[in-house]
Length: 175
Image (cartoon, rainbow, N blue to C red; front, top):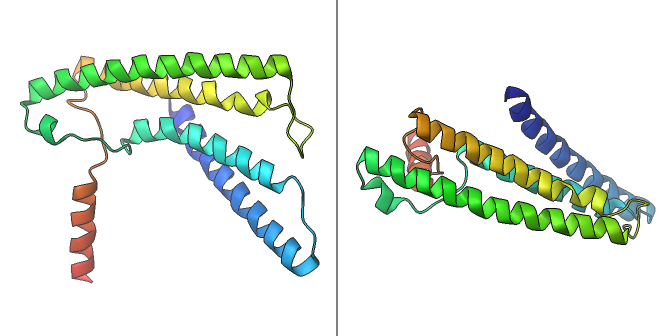
């Protein structure tokens, strides 16, 4: 799984680099040379979409998604674990619906064969990132479910924004 972890991180980094570089080049060409690339917006949009769908699974892996866990944190560790298992199972059900819907959508786009306006590329070849991204999310939730079932995790990993804000405030006060 380390290969997949590194793939997510590298792909998102490359997409962000590509978006930034393209936007910078477009600004320079427009304002200094009164020209530009007609395909820049579409390529930036493609990079952004890829970054989002890979970022969803990355967020599940590192526990970066926010959640309302005030009530769950009041529960005993055993109850918290069972509630977490239920939440992950429900998340897997939801992701499976979205995965099936995105696959249907991509299949329809493949049949229709619509291309981008400024790129000689069929849209489905880019939209395939949706079912791939959701399949990766399902894999991440399955990994989390396994960790909960085997006891290597006791609850969901969620971002704790209150703790992060307090930590930042303490660091500000120190400096």
